[in-house]
Length: 381
Image (spheres, rainbow, N blue to C red):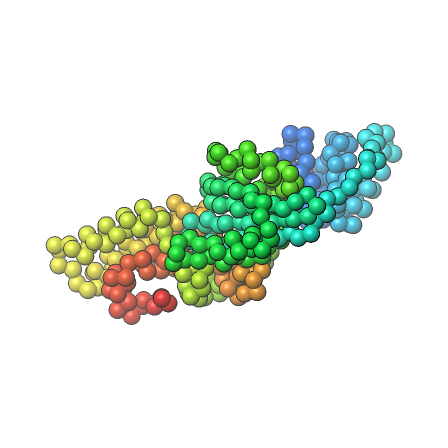
């Protein structure tokens, strides 16, 4: 039953409804877990009622009382709860034994929280790296976390400081890549901060800070299992194909935004592209102006494509993360443009013109030659 649902959903997503890709991925992970005798109940939240019912029916068919009980213990929407309870009642009437619910009567005293906040920096460079900060103070003392995140390598650095809230805010507000490039911080829900950090932790292979990082994350009860889900932006935006196309056409607007102003390809891509541009510029062959422009454009097109393939994970993280932070920051139009670019950049076909312009503006002299071509588009500086 689940296999049929997955196949049907794959066809729908392939037909253009990419907004359902999150549900498809969640359904696949649920099916894989069930085959191993486990269920990730948080993934169920991404399912429609129809697919949720299919999961429950699949478990009911094999009389898996244990997993059905796990789902029952979770916080579900009322229609889902109603369907699940009816299914369990039917199984009980057929003689299927369900584990008795054990009441935990241990008295607990919650630690008082006086102040708690999370802020992150946007992806100021195309490598997608960010700084994530978390502060909490209360009856258990104060804790301030500074975490450097990388989309491919995970956590690059982790620090926990016991400092006052005012000092913690000063530290976060002075974030910078260099003296020339400051990094703003955007307030985010703790759930988004936890998703970023959890995703990075799952990617991290080594580091002297890892034992301490794991200890702190456990102490703060950071739900690392949430990191298995796709980027929240994929669930937070629902753009039609026409809206995506319109966003890509308007992508030049991002060049004027400080979060994208310093985007450029990796050093190796820029170096190799520069070497080929120099060879063409100093070629002993007599090239007409039109031939020279054509050669330059071919070089930029080739290295844009190779650079996109090489850096796709970093680029997508930067686009989706910035789109989400723009939305949280009250810039919905630019948020949709960045998200639309991410939707197109995730495909394997030709990269959007935006990225060719990112590469071209790295070489001002070559741009001057292309600027004279009537069909060229001027890039904001």
